[in-house]
Image 1: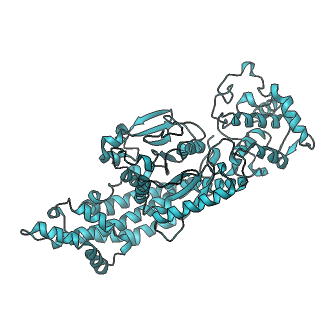
Image 2: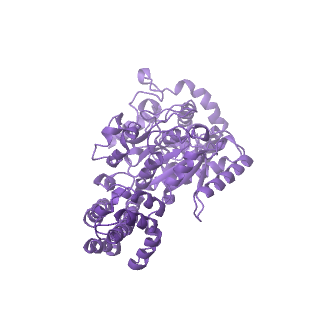
Image 3: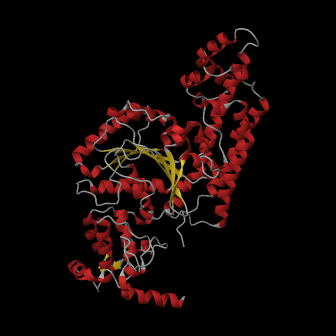
Length: 548
């Protein structure tokens, strides 16, 4: 059995499918004809394809090098992925799409853009210089069944700003920003300098601030006073780049699955971690809403663009003085924007950036522009006024009670050992008979047995009642390991085999064994392998199976 995002009924799943299909139909019927008629893709982003509607929610992870981007991704999916490498130097030199697959492997960028089932076909215009630095890492993973993650190259610091990547890095970031559901921007608590490339990257994200989440990472390595100053400095720097009245949310934490350093703001880091993971966990639930929002945003931009192209075509002379008139119209573009607003009642916020539009118009042949077609504009207005409104009731119906992500993203793991959360993990990660390091255990015995006397000393020091340690006492002791509460709750769910909210001496020994393995750097199993189940519990499980 696998975990699902939703505890959903067949009707809820059908509503999701209906909404997606209807958005596709509306795009191809009402919006795409206007895009083609007004040459929209030559000025803005390429046309949508089926994969852009059908793909899973995507998370773009970006930041300067050595801020913990790859480690953050490994923390989310709880395993390594093909091609990942971590180090203090710039180790990620390409864009990597981490996606679900039946087997592990890497798909090169050129082959990836040919796959109609992947939402990357429109990256081809960026050329080989980019595609040679783009790849897809596929692997079987429960988290990746519900979201995809895009790892990015580390943004260069001021000392390296003269190096050229060979492709338009900000333009690629903007392409992804338009299509992803969430943008995670990581900063190192010890490196808050803003390089030229970082500033250009920020500019490419303008218009997508609603998707942006800023993370001040590695915050356990500074004391509370230093953290306060760094937080203030980061907010001040961000305020100069993102010229919006709203303040960006900055999450403070240390996002990896290793023990955190002892600090006097440990509880703050735990609370911030829970908030960020909850935000990511809700992405699939809100995916249809986000796609509809992006479709409406695109439709408004297409409407404004079509009016601009129609006006320029109408003002161009048929034969003489074409070049001089073209340059005059480009120079007068701000005035033209105002005229279109007044004549067609198009909001000022729907228009593209005037300076960028003027730059793109310089290379265009105005004689090839097509006159505004009233029937297409009527169809587009119907999309914005009535068709989208009809989808809203379905969107409200398709928001059933959600089931959390497995692993550290599971909301049932976070910050609580309440009785209702004590449920066995229903899926398996490693073959039976292997421990966390992958080594075979001979004879099928209990691998914890040899260290149980040491664990028993700790168990009895906690003053068990009726042979069991309560969840409150166990939690207090486990928190001393400095492992994130999400990891400790995962361990608790594996160790509390009878789901009674307390640990007997065997279950406590098992929990200690898993904690020590995690501190040593091993990945935790998603389901408890048979060789880790205490012998007394194996008998109970076999009797239950026979009863079934």
